[in-house]
Image (cartoon, rainbow, N blue to C red; front, side, top):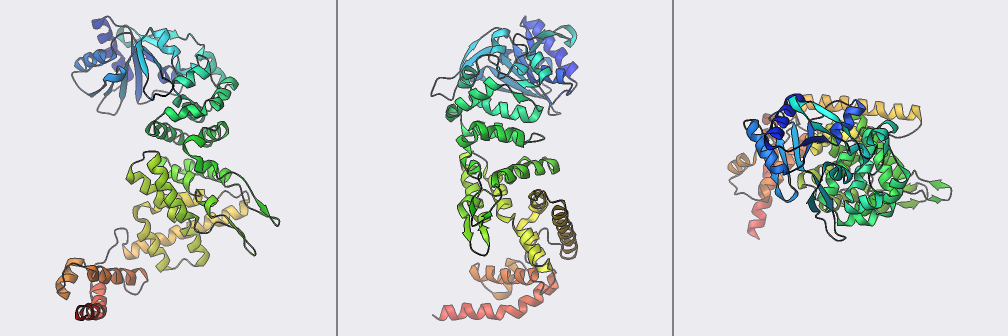
Length: 472
């Protein structure tokens, strides 16, 4: 639905209830930036925001769905096309020193704007007749800061960040999204208040951090979090990547700088935020596996396996879903496989195993692997990228021949039980596994008749083992 039509309905309710309503925050800021309308808009009501939202729902003839958040005096209205309108009572918020829940009280529109995170978000326009908007209300000169591309807090930054420490992560996120710099006093306050982040739940931290990763150039925000010390509060494993050691004239690259570059490289190729997070995590196991070996220099053997384990621990800490955690862990575990495969030989057997192990996540893995090339040597970079071009060609050929995307033994467990007159048990799984291994090794094609013939050849060995075990 068009914003103009939505605002007409907002004015209708505002007029009926005699409650002033204002568009605030990002909508006003983005208008000044010429960024166009997003798929959401924030409305602040000088009065009861939830009652206003209920009346809006009736005015819209319940075209969308209404979700209420009574504890915060807010409500969200979601239209069928996905457009979201957030309704909130004009209010002030503050946090007790040890509390994660804000203390809320009613306020004027000017007081409401003062509690906003940054001046560029502390502007409002009243909704007038016909959905028209009034002049910009800008008590903290946010319009000037938009022109200067500056992030600055409306009040003293120490007070602003102490009241809601998550705003410090938002500063890094907006810097990356908007290509704004952070005013010096605000940046200093972020460094001074890092410990305050401990009162914020990991769910909220994760949500804000992933918004940062969705930015066009995540590195801008990531470096801010690292240099202020905020990253140390929730992802110390990333901070541990920094540093270079020298031994007998042998040094290794700075894994932190490399990792941040990988995230940016992925951002150029994919909007998948979990893939970007996998880029941040891909070398997380290197500090724990770093060893200097004479003749080889610095080594990080098996860091992908340690990395998978660490991702699972990090996923729990950040309250990520099990499915999302396992997706990232899987990409971290296998990110070395394509290059290792090319170092050996791109055989059909090796390609089959890569396809089967990664399944539908193989394309994402290849984006991660391409993005992992951060060398400054143009010839070396071109050579490595061509290797991946060749690997993708080989993957396409093997997929076409073998139809492996949904791979499993063509001779199924139920059929094996019937043919061998066996009950469910480990022997059935071993026979299936043997057939699958034969396909992956290229001994037989991924076809039923060939698999059935191979089954007839090997079943005697497994049945003999069962009989020997039963005799014992």
